[in-house]
Image (cartoon, rainbow, N blue to C red; front, side):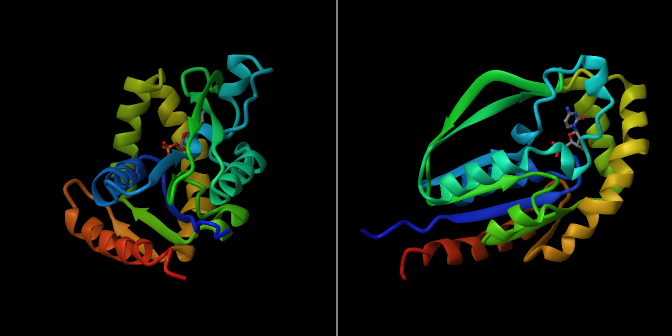
Length: 213
Ligand code: C5P
């Protein structure tokens, strides 16, 4: 029996850098009609459901230790073996896992996006195409502030406090330096279609040939 070869595309970058937008474009426009799945590392934060909300808010979610790497590796390996997975849905308002799960079907191309996609060695090693989205820090902060206040139930003060004490120092220590592992770097800005299209050509050439051997 011939086993199918699954291509794993990793999309890393700092918080609010536009990773999800690029991943969605690759999945829904560039690879449209192909067998492709997009999952987010956001769903792989450790649960911490036994702590109070106040205690959970003190956790440093910008340190790689906050990720359930074991579960993520299991799921990625299952998808690479063409097996379906049941993925937990994460709730940023309560900083915990919900009881809801999503069944992710196996596919020829799997896209994983997340701030630690290239920073955690075991995950990085599984990637076939490694992309880093490089976005100016001030733009990322503005985008993050708007998103966290509007969508993640945070106050202005808490976003600023978290950014200065955790997000920025952890970005400088772990996420920013992981750019060196990227095969491709996209300088993301609004409407920057050229870079994404160039990346798309590369991905299509790799994905197009992947079952030939
Ligand atoms: O979507 P994005 O890549 O920005 O998600 C990563 C960010 O989510 C991290 O910078 C982390 O500070 C934040 N986060 C949070 N609360 C959680 C889990 C993650 O603010 N409970």
